[in-house]
Length: 277
Image (cartoon, rainbow, N blue to C red; front, side, top):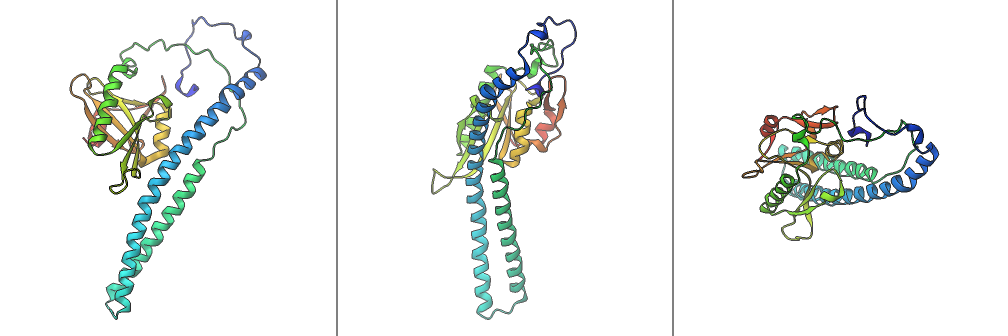
């Protein structure tokens, strides 16, 4: 939580720190009322994310492995039928290497996803305590555009959902769950609509016109973790005709942390240059 805060200047009227609860009381309340529920929430969210990515991974990589297996069977059949063309042996070696690479990717990604399922509460390290007050510059020109406008955000989310559904993807909103993204979009299998062959976790950012985009620390860290499975949909001109700009793996871009109120931002021109309409 403190990552999104900034130390206030002098002259703020706050209660005397001596009236705050003792450290053991704070830690007990923290564990009982915050950390255990938070652990359960994070573990459940992580399990859903990992399960979704795992299904996509198994379907996509196993299909690629299957195709290479068919190719290998075809080449070996040619060789056994007396084909002495040197290219056949070379193609067999290339296909074997490709199969090894795909199987290695599958096993490596399985291990990574298994590690991501593990969540635990570690030792509590006390750094201090603070009264949290509204930011004094929240209405200034530099900060006000970053403040959430519910009407603009609703227009942006509706536009992003319409964009995905127009592509034939199925969208579920998780806006209320604070998971570091707003939507989960799935591309259904053409022969089995209940099975997804591709999944994207989408964070939607709306702007009345065209302007900077900012990610919270949670959103940015989630984008770093999910990489190509994460999409940033910047919806510009929400006051007129919404225009959806999509960025896959947005953490790769040149985000700059702002320490005043910590988040990550990127200029509109750089985002436009890297996005798809």
